[in-house]
Length: 262
Length: 250
Ligand SMILES: Nc1ncnc2c1ncn2[C@@H]1O[C@H](COP(=O)(O)OP(=O)(O)OP(=O)(O)O)[C@@H](O)[C@H]1O
Ligand SMILES: [Mg+2]
Image 1 (cartoon, chains in turn yellow, brown):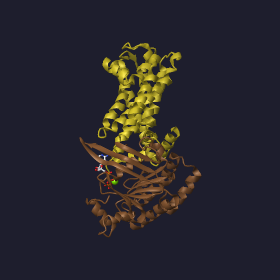
Image 2: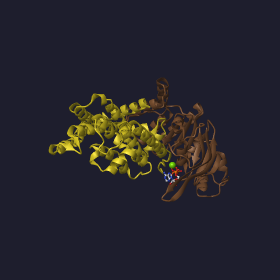
Image 3: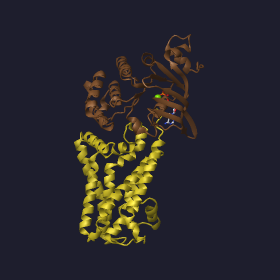
Image 4: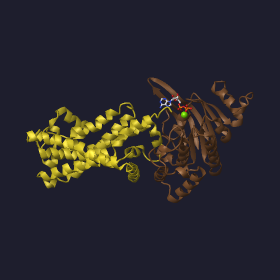
C-alpha cells in the first residue's frame, strides 16, 4: 500500500515537473503565506510578554508542533478532500475500477511537492522554539510522539471531511472548514478559548491532542483548565479512536456512492 | 462468469425514488459475447457500474467471477476490464506510456508479461504514433484504443464495455470490432458490450439482452430477436419496435 502510494506521487511529481517555474513559485508562495502566521504571533508579542499565560517561545513551540503535523498532511494526503470534485467530474468511477483502495488513489491524486515550503517553515519554527526553550530533556520523547499523533489526527479529520463529501456533494467548503479550521484553532494555546470549546476539542473531536495536551507535558506546565494529568499521554489512544471512526465513515461513503447519471 | 439474481438499484432524487434497475436476473457464461441493449435511461450503465463494484445494489445479488463486486471491489478489479466510452479511465495529464506503466504497477503485472502484452496490443490497436502523447491531447479514437489497451493489460477474464464505439469513424469502428472479436475467439475473454450502434451487435454478438425501464425485456440469440417481429426486416426496425413499447415475445 505504501509502495503504491509512493509510486503514485512519484508519477504525479514527474507530471508536475513539466512546469518547473510554477513549481518553484508555489514553494516560495507556501513559505510566504505560512510565514504570515508566524508574523502575527511575533506582532502580538511585540506588545506583550505572555499570551494567556504562555511566553513567546512556548507559543511558537505549540504553533510549530501543530503546523509540522498539519503541513505534512496538507502535503501528502490533503487531496482526499477533492472527493466532491471527483464525483462531479465522474472521475471517481475510474478510480473505483482499479485494484487499489480509493483512499490511496485520492490522497495521491495530483500530488505536487510544492507544499514542502510549509513543512520546512514549520519545522524551522519548531526547531527554533525547542532550542530557545529550556526544556526538560527527560520529557523530549513526547515530541516525536506528539508529531505522529498530530499526523494521525489530521489525517483522520481530512478523511472525515472527504467522507462527508460523498453526502454533501455540493458543499465541499464544509469539510474545508473542518480541516483548515482545526489547524487555525491549534495555532494558539487553547487557554485563549472558552472552556466549552476546549472541552469539545478534548472530548469530542480530539484536536487538543495534536499539540496542546502533549505540549503541556513537554513544557512542564499544568493545564489552565485543570484537566487530569493522564490526558497528557492519551493522545495516541484518542488519535486511533478518531482514525477508526474516520475509516468507518470513509467505507460508508464509498458504499453509498451514487455515481453520476451519465 | 456474471450472475445477477433479482438485482436492483434505485436512487433517491429529491424525495422521489428512481428505479434505474429493478429485479434483474441473468447469467453470462465464460467465453460468451453478449450485447446489452436498451433505450436511453434504460439502466445499462447502472448495471455495468454494479458489475464492477462502483455502485452497491440496493436489492438482490450480483456475482462476477464468483465475487460480490461491491464488497470485493479491489480483488475483482484484477479480473475485470472496464471501458467507459464516455470518459477515459486513463490519467488525463500523463502520456499513454506512463499510464500503462502505472497500470502495470497497480495490477502487479510482471515486467515480461506486461511487455509482451503491451507490444501485442500496441500493434493490433496501432498505438505506435501516439504512445508518448498526453491523454488529453489524443483524439477520441486514439483515446479509445488507449483505454481498451489499459483495460486489457492485466489479461482480465471479463471485459465490460459501455459504448466503446461512440463517436468513432467507420475505420476505427471496424478495427475495434475486429479486435474485440479476436479477443473473444482467441483468448476466450467474456465480453459484455453496451452500445447504441446496432452494427456492433450484428457483427459481434451471438447473444443479445435488451432492457427497458430497468427490466429485462429480451434475452436470446440475435436470430431469436429478429424472430420476435417477423414482419420487420432489419435489426433496427425490430429494436425500434421493442423500444417503442410493443410487447416483447418473452
Ligand atoms: N447517480 C444517479 N443519480 C440519480 N439517477 C440516476 C443516477 N444514475 C442513473 N440514474 C437514473 O437511472 C436511470 C438509468 O440510467 P443509466 O445511466 O443506467 O441508463 P443507460 O441505459 O446507460 O442510458 P444511456 O443509453 O442514455 O447511456 C436513468 O433514469 C437515470 O436518470
Ligand atoms: Mg449509459
